[in-house]
Image 1 (cartoon, helix red, strand yellow):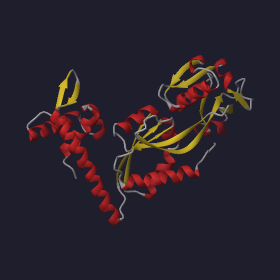
Image 2: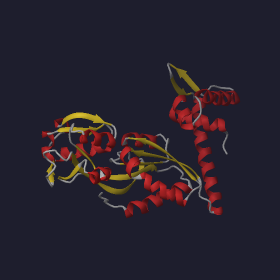
Image 3: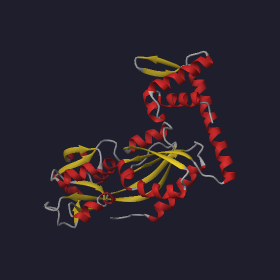
Image 4: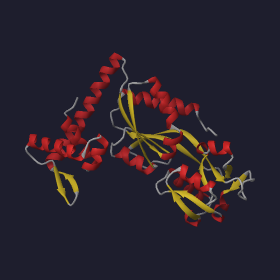
Length: 303
């Protein structure tokens, strides 16, 4: 219900980028620029300083941004209050998830949620854990689901469930017949790892440090940005890797990969993260409760 020009301004001010705002709003960049120009004409002052391909808020822009934050929070509260009376649960939720969670956990959860609440639209942004936390910090998303510890104490973090990690090798590998793999032996083999900022990489670094090794000691032959890419490289015999057991169920069933438990146990926590003070739509409250119940019934799932 809020003025469209103000909605566009608020998104540009939040991201400090016309290009990123256009992507988030599903608009063209010229259309975003036009809306900002209209609002600046309304106030008869510049709201952004534009220098060297960078933008920043003017004093007037900062004041408008502060008010727009409050306007949209009140607007959401009003929508929520009316829907509580009518019993309607609808709206748009923007979620962020790390790659593993987006590919292997969320499809089932969101599919069940959508069947129960068909009037709620869900948009999903996929990044690594660091990227998801950054989107929560910048209010780009309503709720993040991550697979790594969150250090920002100003965010609300709620544990979902534990996720076990296993060593994966091709079936003809010398380790394929082993039942338990000592993590201290990992530097002895060519290793395929996730990119910097990935929760998978971070939990391995912490586990290596715990046993007195540094991740730099690993014979890293490739860095890849998704579990699917890593599985393909391991299947091709390019190295071994450590991934979530929940990501390799298909390959284990087909016999194209072998999963070996690791000692000491390597596991991580899937967590929900969101702003502490941000007003939440009724739809988000329902999604959080739905997700809590889902996680409770899927504790320590092993494929």
